[in-house]
Image 1: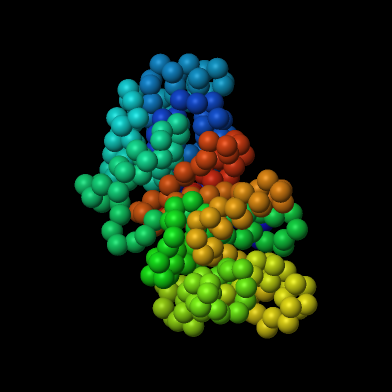
Image 2: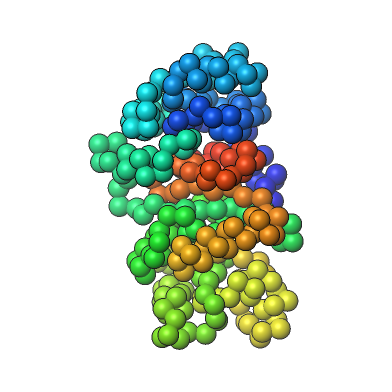
Length: 299
C-alpha cells in the first residue's frame, strides 16, 4: 500500500496530541490540517499569548477551547514537563516535538516517574512512499541509536515489526542491510545480520521473513537481485529495511527524500506512545505525514 491508502485507515481513531513548544507556524500548520481532516484534539504547550496570536493569524483562533487546548509554559524545561504530564495522565496518546531541543524532551521522556519506558529500546522508524516502488517501506534506525549492539538490533527489528503490523502488513519482509551480501569478519554488520537472520522470526514478537546481509539494491529491486544471482525471498518486495548503524541509516533516509523524491513520515517507537520527533528541516507535509503515522500505530 502507498501513503494515501495507509493513512485513510486512521480517520475514526480518537487521537490527542501533546505538542511541546508548539508556537511556530511550521509546527501549527500540519496540526490545524489534521484537526480539520480527522478531528483530533491538540494540547499545545508553550507561551499562551504567542500561541493565541499565531493561531488567529493562521485562521484557527476558533479552535481554541475546542479542538485546541493551550497550556502555558515559560521555557523549554517547563514545556517538556507539562507535555509529558499530559501523556502520562492519559490526556494525550501521542507526544510531538515542536521548537524544543531534542535532548531536553527525550531526557524527560526517559524519567521513570512518568512510567513511559520499561525494558524496550527507543528507536527511530521512518515510512517512505517512493515514486518508483510499489508500496511503502519502513527504515530503521536512522535517528536514535548510533551504533546498536546485536541485542539492540534485535529490539530495533521488533519495534519496526510492531509498526508494520499496526499498518496492516501481515508478514513483513525484512532486509538486514550491509554493503555486501556475503558474510565476512572484516565487516561486522554482515556477521550481525547473519546471526539475526538465522535466529529466525520465532525469536521476534511478530510473524515475518528476515534475511541478511543484503545490499540495498538487492532488497529493493527484483531485477538487481536476479542479475546478482540472489535467491532472496525478500528481494524486490521488502517491507522493512534495517540499517547497520545510524550513519548508513541517516544517509539512506536523506538520499531517499532529497534525491529520490520520496514522501516520508517518521516516529520514535518503543515507548508507551509514539513520539513525533521531526527535524527542523522537515516541511509541513513531512510533519503532517508523521502525525498520521503516529495515529496509525498508537495503541
